[in-house]
Image (cartoon, rainbow over all chains, first blue to last red; front, side, top):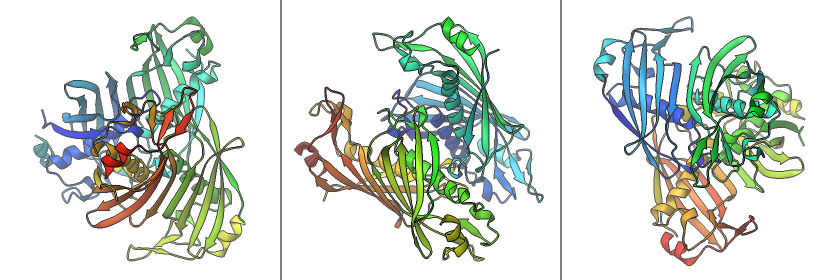
Length: 137
Length: 137
Length: 137
Length: 137
């Protein structure tokens, strides 16, 4: 299993909908931020400036899946616990658990592919190199 | 199978990210709008003003799952084709296919529960009544 | 005075805040879309593909000013009436009136500069050329 | 002059547009969060739970004005310095300076009215009471 990194979010008034609770696409937005933050906190440079991976554009999403358990509202702080659940060659699965203290608010999985831009301009998925696996271990 | 309703979206500059493509949480935002639009186009009143369902607050999400096939960008028009794929007592699954002409951009499923607010203030899921099933058939 | 172009917006549940009304930054988002739409409807190509303006990156904002008159909510359609109020060399002011039927919801002014990217990579404001003035007249 | 309170924001990938810089309505979103945060940091309870102001719904915006000086991008941290610049009876002006270190990114002013909901359901602006002035002094 990989490292777990925690990303804290303060829920604002504008993140909430007329029901007074977080409008759910904001959870996807925060999980995306948690995904970026994860690799930085593991000591890796931003994707587009990785000397070892020329042309790297990052890790586009192939799939997301989120299960909503209970709601959150403004004034609250949420902690997003992020791990890489599975490395699968060119693809990996990140799991995000959004917590308010000990309460699970929602849990999401993002399936992403590591991509570089080829000379033709087209994107190509490449195997996740060992130094990235090591940084997250 | 239920009716299919189409909801059109114009992608704007601000919907796109530094990669120049739609930032994915916007697809969730548009699918939510398509879900609301679906029942209205089927001839039903808004959830909170359904005389037959006093206290109805709508259909909170239990789960979302989205598969991303190709990207979209600003200046494009997308058509979201929405159906109810499954009625399951108090719960139902809506499927949204986001199309650019004949090209599938992404496909999402939302699992929702029909809820009313009880006198205690707590939400309670209730079986989807026949008149709603009929309106969508 | 320039042409007036109307850009229609359907307000969704997710555009609204816990007070049940449009969260105000969404008005800025819609005015930006109306600004882009304005020049297209005047028959001009998108900024970044204007053959007559190589390196054009569009019209970054220098200033916005919005006056809020009354609120709007989901289920409503708003019409944004956009004009260029003033051409001032390299800079111009667009005025957006957000209407619900005959009711003014809010009124915004955006001050923008027409910019090209120089070989050095730096942006440079340039005088708005006559063919753009003509297209909007 | 009032207290100055600082609200820190981490700019994410999804906050930025295809030009690679913060999409400007996000600045309004952050200034709104900074406005809420301001009064909390001054030791006041949230608007809707102020025992001294029954029916208080907060401070709807009458007007915003923002001047953009330079751009910001993802990976950066911004500090929003917020003050009340002017108390004007029922209305007040908050000033937000968005800083990246010593660099001013943009500066915004929000004009707000303190409002309570009347029995009729209509909003009514009321004079800002002394204990709020004192808390912010």
